[in-house]
Amino acid sequence: MAAQFGRRLRRGATTAAVAAAAVAALSASQAPGAPLVASDGDQPTTGAAGSTPSGDGAASGNSPYFTDLPPLNTPNKPGTSVNLPVTGSPESGIPASILAAYKKAQQTIAGTDAACRLPWQLLAAIGKVESGQARGGRVDAQGTTLSPILGPALNGQGFALIKDTDNGAYDGDSTHDRAVGPMQFIPSTWATWGQDGNADGRKDPNNIYDAALAAGRYLCAGSRDLALAADLDRAVLSYNHSDEYLRTVRTWFDYYNRGTHEVPDGTGILPVESSTGTHRNTGSGTHGSNPSSSPSSSPSSSPSGSPTPKPPAKPSPTPSDPGGPGTPTTPTPTPEPTPTPALTAVQNAGTGELTATAGDAFAERIKVLAKSNFGKPLAKVSVTFTVVGDTDAAFDGGKKTVTAVTGTDGTATAPVLEAGEKTGAFTVRATATGTSLPAVTYTATVTARQADAIARTGTAELTAVAGQTFTDVTAKATYKGAAAGRVDVTATMITDDEKPVENDKGPYFTDDDGNPVRTFVFTTDADGTLTLPKIYADGAAGTYKLRLTTQGGATVVIELTVEAPAA
Image (tube, one colour):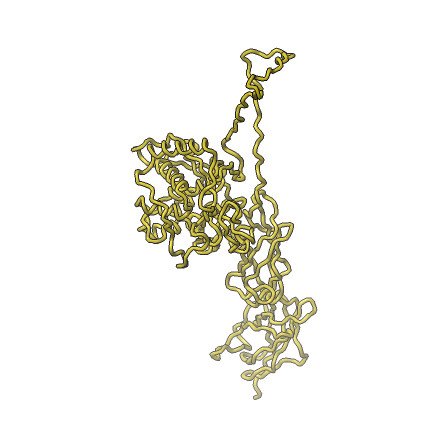
C-alpha cells in the first residue's frame, strides 16, 4: 500500500482510543509475548533477481490498510490445540482459494528457504489487512481477482509521491503508481519480487497464488528467521513501515495461529475500517456497519444568559402506541459493484470433421469460443493453436503454432490448416494464451491421395519370349478427370479365375535383391503417369494378366503374352 508523508492520517480521537483499547486487550490475551521492534527502517536488500526493491522501500508503498481487529474471543482458548477447527467464528474463516494459496506459498518456500520458517498464518494476517483476503475471496478458479484491487494514486497528496514505473501495465495508471492485487504490491516492487505461484507462465499481482508467493519471498529476504519475533517484526515493517500496521498484523497473526477454518470463495467477512480514517469499500458489499451518531445539540442562550422560551409542542394528531415498536430505519445498502468479466473457459465453437487428402488444405477451419465467468462470450482473448503429433501438416505458411484473438462474438478462428504428405491422424490443441485453463483438443486426419480412374498408355501388344523381358508398361491415373499425382498404385500378376488371386507362375518383377515378386506398389509421378519396372517373361507359353489398382479403387487389367523360344 502507498507511502505517506511522515505520519498516518488519524481517525477521530474516540475511534483511535477504542482501537487502542482493543489492541491492548488483544495483546494481553493473544500476543506472542515478544516486544515489537523499533521502526529502524529494516528492508529486504535483495529480490528474486538479486536487485534492491524500488519505490519507497516498502512492498506496498505504505498505502492505506484495513485496521479492523479480530474479536476478543479467539477461535481456541489460549493453550489449547492449534489444529484448525472445521467451524469457528466468522472472523476466523478464510476463503478456500486464498487459504490454499497461503499454504502453497509456505510449502514452496520451505523447499527453497527452509531457514526462513515462514508461517502461512503471517501471509493470512497481511492478506487480511491489505485486501480483506482478496475481498472475501472474490477470485476465479485460477485464483485471479474478479476485478482489480487498487490502492490510491501515490500522487503526493496525503501519500508519498511515486511516479509511474510500469506505464500503467499493472495499475492502469500511467502517471503515478498504485498498490495492486490481494497483497497490494506497488508495480516497482512487483517488478523485482513478482512470482509465478500457480505455474501458468505468468507473474500476475492480481493472482493470489502469485502474490502470496511473492509476499513470502519478500518477507524472507535478508536471511530472516520468521520464527524469531524480532525478525518477524522487521519483515512486517518492511512490508508497510508503520508501528500501527505491525500491531494490526501481529494481532491477526496471533488470532489465526489459534485456529481458522475454510469458507467458500466469495463469502469471507470484509473489513471496512481504513488507516486513513475512512470507511474503505472493498467493492464486494459490506459485512458490518459503522453507525454514525449525530452530536446532541446544546440549547442556545440569549446574550443576557436567560434561556430563550420554546413554543409548546403541538400534539400529535394520531396518538402513539405506548410501548409499541418505533418505525425501523432502513439503512441505505452499499451498491454491489459490477464484477469485471473474467475468462473461465475455452471450448469448441462447432468445428466439423477435420479430414484432408495428402497435400491438400483442410476445408474445415478450427474455431474456438472463449466464455466469461458469467457464461457469456468474451472478446479480446488470445488463443494459441498448436499442431502436435507425428505429422508434417501445418498452418498456412508452414507454421506449427499460431495465435488469434477472439472477436466480439467470443470466437477465434485458426488460419487454414494444410495437410502434408504423411498420412494418418494428428492433434491440434487450442489454449487461452498464458493461462492454465484446459486446452481444447481436435483430431485431424490426412488420407492418401486417390485416383478414380487408371488406363494403360500405348496400344502395342505386350509380347515376350520366355526368359526375356517385356517392353515398358505405362499407365496414367486421374481423379475427377485431372491428373492424380503421387497416388499409390498396386501392380499384381493375377490368375484367370472368377475371383482372381496372385499368380505364382508366369511373368514377374524383381525386388532390390533380384528375387522374383508378383505384387509391387508404385507411385505415380506429379502428372499422374506411371512407368513400371522391367517385367520378366517366365513359365509356359500363354497369356497372363497384370492388374493395376489405385488408391481409391480404380483398376485396369493388362494382358501379357509369353511365347515359347524358337526351336
